[in-house]
Amino acid sequence: MIESDRLILRRWRNEDRLPFADLNASPLVTEFLPRLTRAESDAMIDRIEDHFDGPGFGFFAIERKDTGAFAGMAGLAVPRFEAHFTPAVEIGWRLAEEHWGHGFATEAARAALAHGFGLLDLKEIVAFTVPANRRSRAVMERLGMTRDPAEDFDHPNLAPEHQLRRHVLYRLKREDFS
Image 1: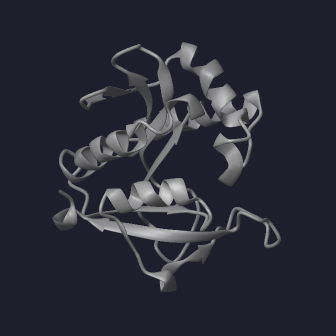
Image 2: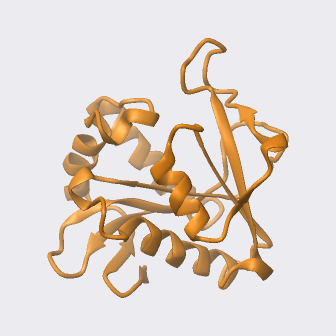
């Protein structure tokens, strides 16, 4: 478990499955992500939990301290595909739309970065998204992550004609994290 000023990043509970499935089915949340069915969303939680058992870290469920509400997920993972920058550890987040606009994504991601660079002793963490995802790119930039356009890539898990295939890559080295 990781705590920030307003959030708790914790392991997943059964009661997180329905709100996570709702989040993954939201057209707004999935504008730049593949939309998931309930079964796919549940399978994602299962994979996340397995990831904690493997490398010892993963995407945490985000709980708001003020309301106890499930807000989404944030954390670290090893990408399950090969690209020019792998092997690597990525940071990611996904919040339900009712929790947007309050700085929760940045706060949760900053806590995950502190965990990765501190306890996990990682040297570098990457993040990636589609070029049009301005909200996530803004979070990456607020975190101090930088992009070299020469490192942008086509996501190998998406078909060549898929509209979300092209991705931008951001990096952050431990010595640049503040």
